[in-house]
Length: 307
Ligand SMILES: [Zn+2]
Image (tube, rainbow, N blue to C red; front, side, top):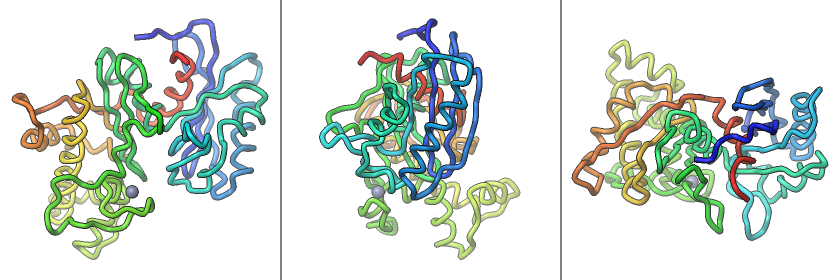
């Protein structure tokens, strides 16, 4: 695995749908500064300005820090424009070039789930694992693959994007599923993301609760809440099993808000067993070491990857 370049300062930015986070990373991957600002929603030009301002704030008193950014979606290698972002005002824009022009320095960009997986694979919960799948379960459902310390991305820049595959081994009640923002029906994201869990609970119970409230009620023994968590864990197990049968990872790291649901780490290996095409069916599923910080840490470390 490539080690951190001790000579260089790095700035990592994580462009989320509601907030932009940034860190200044120094030698030894130490965090020297961190700031968080609101995302100017639905305003592309203001988003670029906000990213430039945040970078200037982080770089204050330093020189030559290299900038990496984690984004929802990715830049298409074909059109060189943003695609697949659930922050849809970014799509169709040359975000990496516009940001580099505004900063006057080169920028490396990758999908936020890729940055998460990279950070956890380099010095996080999956350190020393050869094949790592990072799955983000937040407002959306993203994924990233790291093999031998390098991101696995191809000619479409969609490596690891499992969230818009359909829920596998669907029951008649789950098929065809509801429509996703991407235009498809029954995407995993509509089932296993935070809003997916909330919507499922609301459909069956008529109660609109947050994911945190559902988990809290389940802990107190509420039957409907426990059933919602069970359905969610079973669907997540099916979704992850589908990935395992293709890339056979050593470790799966969960990220995003739902990665705080501790029952998942106990239940998932058992739930996945019957779906995995191998004698030893279960797999290691772990919580993230860096939590929310993995997006910015991974973005900063895009500069430690070969071109
Ligand atoms: Zn979708």
